[in-house]
Image (cartoon, rainbow, N blue to C red):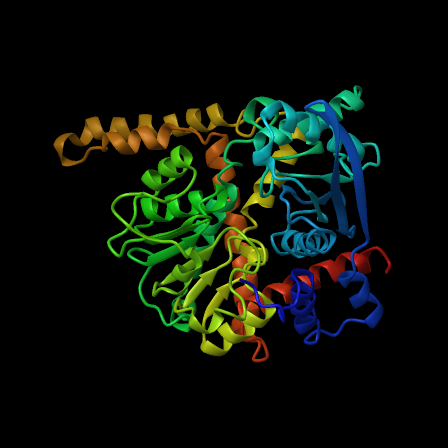
Length: 476
């Protein structure tokens, strides 16, 4: 349980912002302009369900319009409130600036437990919420572009896109009003997995620099590292899956709502996922010890801890007992400001949320561009690439015939080299490049400035500097 003396999520974001700007030379007026939330709209709307009218409360917050459109997800959860939405909108501003996605920051939320409604009811609720936002331009391809978040996914985004299109029948760019849509509704390959894939790319980049690995009191590469992950939702599942299947990590702990699984020999992520889908939780899963108090597993020894679900799971009550030398924040705000201080004093390296979970908004940017350009990535150049590669293969085969047994191409090389990049490969390439460049910008500040002791401060310094430059370019 979170201690009562903890700052709120919004206060934590402001505290971390203040810690960074204290190291910058910004005019006070500009500093305040970047910090404050521009506007928050609260909507209360009614929907007739099960023979009576139900009233729902939703929010859409716009933190910064230094670039437009503004960008940020819509979450469905009973805990949604104005403070949380405004804090998340602020993080979106800094996140977009850090990864050079040309958006301002926004966020939305609906106070609802989506599990209590069937699909048809959720569609009615979502369409009405979208209507209330769209008629105020809080959903718009050039002004405010939502995306999935906790409790929402492709299905809800498709409903929102269709509702906007019904209200704007002549808008040729209507599909760009929201991202995270299914492929058959204007989505992009790789969007569902994007945030989890971004976590994987972030860790790969971290382990490319021996200085960073040493700062975390670790050694070697990513292969073989023991990982505990909190939350096996969309982000946590994909991060765990990719790290275990492609990078050789051992997932030794998985924490869910009904407890946690722990096995030093490693857990099969796919098997756990299937069990959760079938049984609604991890209880009863074979081949692992079950802990009824799931969050206690956060304190088990491991190499990498990945909180991938809720805010504030690492706080003043448990920070001192965290044993992981490296934490990567796959969720938004999983470490409170107080816990952050304790962990930094212990020498724990934290890869911050504004960078670590930026894979989602990065691929959302690609989807938005795809919707505006009205063409699938790779459609123009893929076969041309294959034709040019065929010229090289033909020449190598001629050389092969000339040299005989002295030299020959492997069949695998020919197959791989001839294949032009499809949309998914291009999306992954763009995401990998984005995560590398953004991390390197933080790393440079972290290593070169003596007054910067952690990656979170470095991330804020980089992102706030970019937002300030945008405002200055506007004449502010």
